[in-house]
Length: 411
Ligand code: DWN
Image (cartoon, rainbow, N blue to C red; front, side, top):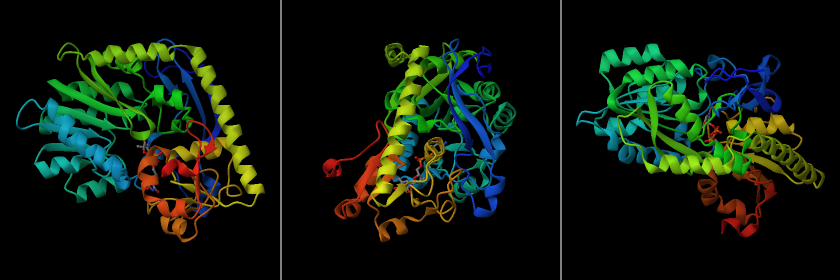
C-alpha cells in the first residue's frame, strides 16, 4: 500500500487511470519512441484527509527549459493575478517596504505588477524558458526549485517576507516538508502564505477528473491543508472560493496564533463535512462517475466519427492529456487540437499523438464540433468565438457532464 506524503499513514488508491505520459510533454514525431509513461493512480488518506497521486514522475521530467505552459496566455487569468497583486497581497503588508516571494512565478504574470509599483520581490521558477519571459519584464527570478535551502538563501539576501504567494504550484511538491519548513522560516512573524489551487470539492462536484495528472500531486481541501501546515507551526486563517481553473480555493496561512482566524474557515470546513470529503464512499462514487464520463465521451465522439463530422479539440491543456489517454481518444476521433501557445504548435499531444495546430487553422476551416478541453476558460473563449457559432459550430463539453451545448448557450 502507498504511504501518505503528509502523515506517513498507508492509504489505498480509489482510481487507476493506467499508463500516462507527462501532461505537458508535447512532442515531435522523432521523440515518440522514447516517450516516458508512468502509472496514474489517485488515493485518499483517511488519517489526514489528503487526496494524492500514488506515483509522480521526477520534477525535472515535468519542469525544464521547454516547459509548455505560459500563464499569460489567458487574458482573464492575467486580470485575476493583477487583482491579487494590487488588492489581495497589500492587505498583509506590514510596512511600507514590503517584500514578496512567489513560488512558481512562471512568466511573471503576477510579479510584473510588483515591478511596476516598485515592490521588492523575488520569483522562483524552475522552468527556464518561462522564467526568461518574466526576467525580460524586469521580474527578479531565481531559476531553481523552491525548497528549505533556497528559502534560507532568499532570507539571508533579502530578509523575511510579508507575503509568500503561490498559484497552482503548492499542489506539485513531493518534498512538501522541505517547502513548508522553508516558508515558515521565510515569513515574518506577521507574514502570510497565500496560495490558490484547484479545490477538491469542485473536482468531486464537477467530476473534473482531468485535474488529475502528473503535476497535480495533491488535491487540497481546507481540512487537509490545515492539517498539513499545522505540522510546521502554521494554520489556515482565511479561505475564499475562486471561479478560476474550474473551481479553486485561496488559502491564507499564518504562523499559528499570530493572526485571527476568519469565520470563513469553519464555514468551509462544515461544507466539506456535508460534501463527504472525509468519507471513502465519496471517492468510490467519484470513480463510478469518472468511468461513466469516459463511456459517454467515447460514445459521443464515435457517433460523430461515424456520421462523418469534423471534431477538433480547443486548448491543448495539461488536463486534456488525462482525458485523451484514459479514454484512448486519438487522431481518428479528433482531427487536431487548436492552441494559441507557440511552443505547442506543430507538436503532438502526449501519449495519443494528436497534432497541435495554431488558432489560425481553427478559424480557417471551422469544424462541426469543438471539444472544449480549456473548459475552465469557457467564458473568455465563448466571448471570442461568435464566428464559429455563426458558422453552425457546436461545443462538446465533458464537465460536469458529457454533452453538446445548445445553440443558444452562448447567445
Ligand atoms: O495547474 C496548472 C495550470 C494553471 O496550468 C498547471 N499544472 C499547468 C496548466 O494546466 P492547463 O494546461 O490545463 O491550463 P489551462 O490554463 O487550462 O490551459 C489552457 C490552454 O488553452 C493553454 O495551452 C492556452 C490555450 N488557450 C487557447 O488556445 N485559447 C487558452 C485560451 C484562453 C484561448 O483562448
